[in-house]
Length: 110
Length: 121
Figure 1 (tube, one colour):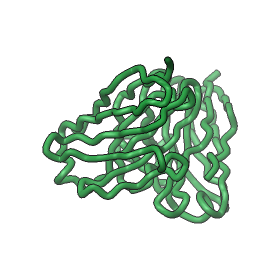
Figure 2 (cartoon, helix red, strand yellow):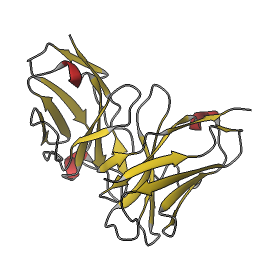
Figure 3 (cartoon, rainbow over the protein chains, first blue to last red):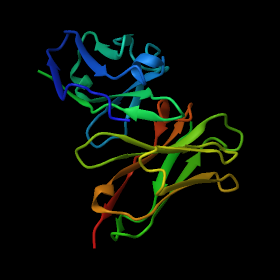
């Protein structure tokens, strides 16, 4: 299984909304509602911010939301804040007890 | 709350076997309904799922690494381990352990701080 495709970078100004895409196939993103998103600040371990496409773990601000259409999942950050500047990775179930991560997107807050 | 801490050698020679351990505190692996996983990240690159294990010993591996990887669990010491054989420079990475709700490393939280493994002679 190949890594899911994410744009290498994305940027926005504080207060704006920003959406990151995660393109897969019918064999992963499109076939299952098991898409997660992780936020990783420099030098830190990844932190889960979305699971099962749309759900937020306790403590994650509701500025973060997830969705899916066909073979592409998306993460939207509303009301962008400077602290949201980080790398973001999607992850999906790919069948047969195998998971796959996305290529990662570096988000810059201008 | 649950915390995970990786430990192991920071330097491994090419062709040798890597052995890492993840100590879990704040929760009993044996009593847990979670899976316990390993994920790695080469410097400046993305994440790659390696494998997961359940306390009973059932394991689930990334097919691309399956022939080289063994994940095991030691419930008496509340830890789980990773062994990876035939190490090459391409295996140089930050290795994380994590608690996962699934068998395939998709829904993992929290993660350990990671341990950097460099493969070099």
